Image: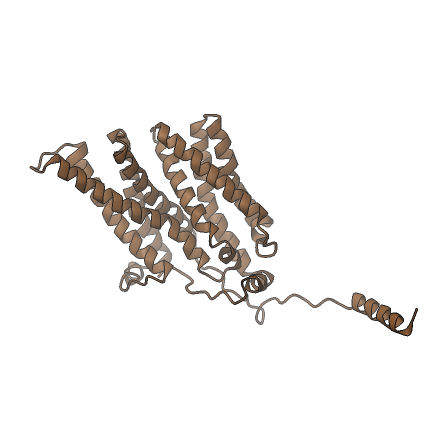
Length: 328
């Protein structure tokens, strides 16, 4: 062995025996990314608001498809109930009503929070108006001297705009999470809106089934969204972000994410194929609600992991700038 090879072997042995540098624990003991400060009201708001929005979409579909008026009425009432509860949950998280009103002073189309607050207000107004028109002119058949065609057109227009804003309400929450610097949220910013939208649509359909409406169309909707959720579940499992996705696969948050994904995806789909509709509906609603809390918990764990923050920044090529940290 030459002197050069001997020296190289010695350097290799020295490098192997040297202590490995410790992973950074943050900035002077503080996390590199501020964990989300949202409390239990916000995940519940994500769920309730999504159900409200997608219930309006189902009401529009039932009206266009000549479904029984009782079903359209139930979907409208479910939408209105969610629209009335959602602002209460936001105000509880914000602390006082004036903070919620301040969110409406200026519309910022670049801000997911501003868009969400305005969407909630517009959607709530539209779905309440739709219910009033439906109850007075269609369900109760009150004669106010207006042509039936005009009333039907007005109701359809209100439901159409309510469904559009409702779809935005059901999906913007995923955009909201992805627009932060939380590594696990940012890395799944394209998947979260699809996941939240599908979970909201499936939950609305499942709740209407549990209320006694066994329409074949609802069963079809349940099958489709369960299939979508199964794909989302699989994509989450095979995601290549090993360090960033650590909260999704280990510990309490990993158990929550996987349980929620299994309930809304393969379990609900299998129960649908077995024609056990009530159990499928219960499984889906449970999983959809659990998923909101699971993603929130995963975000907290990810924010406290400096290794995940560094990995996310390295994968994206630049720093993920947190635009906002709570609803405004």
